[in-house]
Image (cartoon, rainbow, N blue to C red; front, top):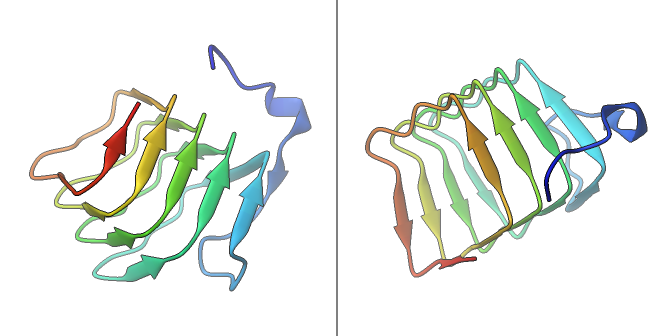
Length: 102
């Protein structure tokens, strides 16, 4: 994935109960000390999001783009991150436990 076509994206919130997100943008989201499990994000765009101390367990991130996000102290557990890009993101203390990074 080189670049997402932002015109094709729909907006959503990470607070929804959806399990699958495709061509979705998440802007200025704030999740703190939460746990998200069994979610799938395909070609999604995260901008200016704060995920401090969030746990993503058994989640799939495929061709996603993260820009200006605070991913500090996130725990990715048993998750897949394939073809993702992180631009100007803070990732201090982020862990990738039993994850596949491609």
